[in-house]
Image (cartoon, rainbow, N blue to C red; front, side, top):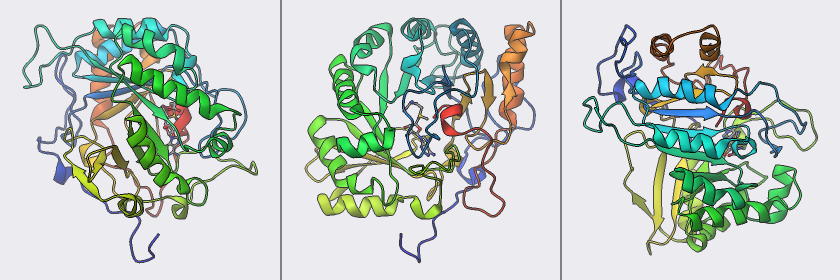
Amino acid sequence: MAATTPLISIESPAELSTAPPREVAPGFGERLRDSHGRAITDLRVSVTDRCNYKCVYCRTGEEGTHYAELAIADYLRMIRAFVALGIEKVRLTGGEPLLRAGLVEMVEDLAQMRTAWLPNGSPATEGLPLDIALTTNGHLLESLAAPLKAAGLSRVTVSMDAVDAATFARITRVPRSFERVLAGVRAARDAGLGPVKVNCVLLRGFNDDQIEAFAEFSRRERVIVRFIEWMPLEEPSTAPDARNWKPETVVTMDEIVARLNAVRPLVDLAPNATSETARRFTFDDGLGEIGIIAPVSRPFCGHCSRIRLTSDGKIRTCLFSQSDHDLYGLLRRGGTDRDLQTYIGQVVLGKEARHHIGEPGFQKPARNMVHIGG
Ligand code: SAM
C-alpha cells in the first residue's frame, strides 16, 4: 500500500441520497426507506449458521455454530413481510446455505412471491418476480445448480479466494476443496445461473499473488470475478494459521487496478444500477469481467439498499450494527403480518448512515461475517 494514500475515503450518505430524509416510520403498506432517504430493496437472509469451510480470514477453525436456525416456513413468512414493504431482491446466504435441507423448496416458494411496487415506483396490482440470488462456497453446488435453477433461482455468487488448488485448501482448511468448487462454478454456468460471479477476498501476503491468475480465470471460464476488500468481521482467533484484521492486510482497489492493468489494459464498464457496489471493468479486448468492491478504501454506504435477516431471525441494518432486532421474537409471540411490517419499518428507520472502519473508536460488531450472512 502506498504510504501516501489514505486507506479510507468517506462519502456522506446524505450527499448521495436523492430522496428526502424521513423521520417517522413508514405507515402500514408504505415503501421501506430509512431516515437518510435510502430505499431499502435488497434483503439478505442467512438460512443457517453452519458452514463446511473454515476460511482462515473468517472463522477460528473450530466446528460448530453460534446461533440457531429456524423453520423454512418462518423465514418465508418474515420475507413476505419485507416483500410487502418493497424488497425486490432476496439473497440467500449463511453460514453455508447449501447445507440447509429444504433450500430448493424455499426457492420455489420465493419464486411465487411478487414485488409490491413496479420499477417506476407505482404500487403493483400484479408485481414482478423477485430477483433471487444465492451466495455459496460452491462445495455442494455441482449437484444442486440445476435443481436450484429449475426452482427459480436467478443467479449465484460463488466465493473462491484462490485459483491455485493448494492455496485454496490452505484458506478453506478443507482438502481437495478447489476441485469441488470449480465443478460447482461450471455446473452453475451450464445450468444457466449466470452470469456466475466469483467473489475473492484478498489478504496481503497470503493470496494476493492470485490477482493475475483470477484475471485469466475470468476470461477462460466466462465468469465475473469480483475482488472484495477484507473487512474487520472475522472471528478473533489465536490459531497459528488464523488471520486477524489489520489495515495493512487489506489489498485496496487502487492496487488491484494497477496489477490488472499490467496484465492487459482495463476498460471501465458502466454500473448496472445506482446501488451497484462493484466498480466494473473488462479488458481492452472485451474478454472477461472484473468487479472491485471496496467497502474499506471507498465505502459505498450512501447507496446502501441492503438489510439483513440472520439465521436466528434478527434484523441487522448494517454489517457493522452494534445491535440486532428480534423480528422472529415478534413472530413467535404471535405478531400478525401487520405487526411484522410495522416493526420492520421502525427498525429500518434506524439504519446507520455508514460504517466507521478505520476511524478512531471503531468497534467490531459482536457478530462476525459468517454469523451475519455475507
Ligand atoms: N458460505 C457462503 C460463502 O462462502 O459464500 C456464504 C457466507 S460467507 C460469510 C459470504 C462471503 O463473505 C464470502 O464471499 C466470504 O469470502 C465473505 N467474507 C467473509 N468474511 C469476510 C470479511 N471479513 N470481509 C469481507 N468478506 C468476507
